[in-house]
Length: 431
Image (cartoon, rainbow, N blue to C red; front, side, top):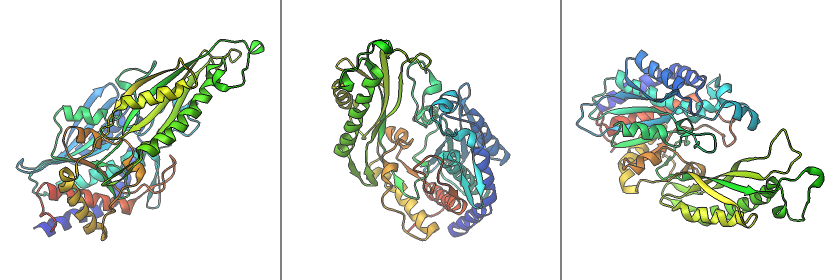
């Protein structure tokens, strides 16, 4: 029975190659940036309904929603979640005027042969399509599941946080949708975060904290400007910020090196950077600015107390401006599952990977994968052993590059399906 069922499900997945491409393109070309995920959520929900699958549309606030598809078991065995995120990147006026790059939400996705290109697909609607196709194949094959398979498409994973005039749930992210769903009872024994990992797995992830650094200066008319020798003594807070940025960058490099950690799934390297700044009146640059703000992203180790990091950052910027202030406006801790907790899940995925791809699964994930925030943190925080695993996005270290290859995605769907069926008791566990 097991071999015949696996063959049936795999055959359905192979026959779905064009459906998978069509779904990834449809989702990738739906305009739904972070904070406005509802249009993509509705398209996901419609796909489940059109394919005769059970699905819940879960509203959050206006224009933000998540979806949970479900393949039901009989309730007597283990259950598993596959979790992808709907949002990709910011959009709108701020992005258009400040990022000086094409808005990936408007660029969307395109197909070139067997390659799907576009940041919206790479992060994360390609893996979302993979889990949806896997779930449909299991349902159509009438696999005798003991536990449920939950297929989550969550809003609010991409990094964002309320600050200054940008307030409210519109700007909440980093686990918002996944937490929302958990708090409404969408739980299981294990969770797989469906993201591109080049077929490696990570069950330990960095946290993230955002800081606002504020520096002060004096209002001086350009002809009367007094310019001392050192940048940190300059009356213009913007000029003073240049010295602060250099000091923060040097601290970030040292802090990363000092705190780099080896985990059982790869190297964790907690980086930091100044990601934004504000100051002055753009249409009136004839006055030195009395105010400059820097916005800093600091990645944290699981279990790390953010307070000492804030003190370090404060000490650094006060070498430039003794009156500088540093406030934390978001702190989402990192978490990890223990090797013992994750063993049933990772062992099942490793066996499925070897069966599908004919080679052992990589033993270590890319440092960047281990060192970023992913919704694994949400599940591991509440005691649901979780890891992130998925196919490749190619060379995508620079946004807008790379692609997802359809054959690679089909392999990913088979691994997801086989993992789900073994965990949920529809087929025998690998020997």
